[in-house]
Length: 183
Image (cartoon, rainbow, N blue to C red; front, side):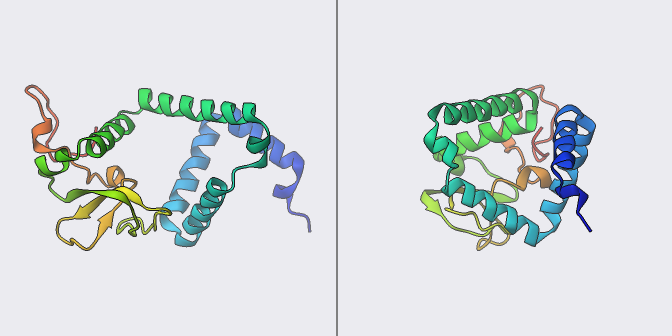
């Protein structure tokens, strides 16, 4: 019996629908994110695949500098679009940069659940929340205050609502809670 999903015609129709139908695309992305969040084997498989692609760039990019520039441009445009459209993404990016480039900010601000730890070099930890062993390590980790031996990466924090705004973040007239999640 032939697998219909493996036929070139099916893949072509699927790609066209994915590219043109926002509801279909959102449904597939939701399904992927749900599986990624709840299936450790699938998550590890995807992480290894991404690490392999990162370490072994596609030969097209090595042979064609124009393709490489185009891909970099597409990635930069996608990041700019996310920055413009998603307030949470913008807030997390600004917070990460503030912590990385102003190390004293890590000590000046009191956080309720976590303590930001900025290492001088990339350090390997396994994220206590998502279970990822970050390949190559990270410089910025969130140490759990109630369990100092455990660390969280930046990935799951905004989704759990645990990256709280620091108490001094709220300005006069700001109605958001100082312990609420990122906007």
